[in-house]
Amino acid sequence: NKYVKHVYYPGLESNPQHDLAAEQMNGMFGGVVSFELKDDINGLDSFSACKKMINSLKLISIAVSLGDPETLIQHPASMTHANMPREDRLAAGIGDGLVRLSAGLENTEDLIGDFEQAFSVL
Image 1 (cartoon, helix red, strand yellow):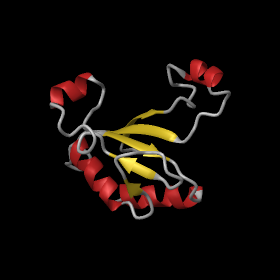
Image 2 (cartoon, one colour):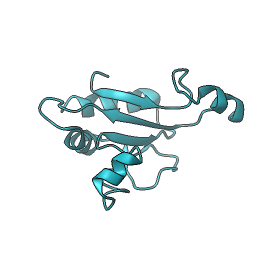
Image 3 (spheres, one colour):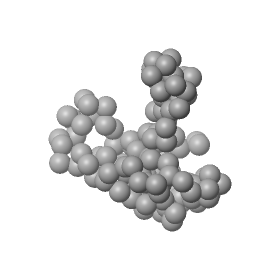
């Protein structure tokens, strides 16, 4: 996606920990993925773009805890780490544009469609 700056997923060969994850996870990388949105998406900073995109999802639910059979999403900067000073959050690698997703059991095409319509509002 043209709005995504970086994807964090151990199943990607480009991930620096891919080989270790492949060994430890027996090639089963799981359904948790994180990604960062770029800054200045149609005039929105990454924090605002994340909030707008996440709030536009129709099928995927917003949740603080990830791990249900349904697909869940969160924006750590405004949710789980909102009380952490921004400088500390950034030092810990939790940027304003970071989004965490736990893929559930829904139809893949439905999830892709939900993201497509949510990104279209940016």
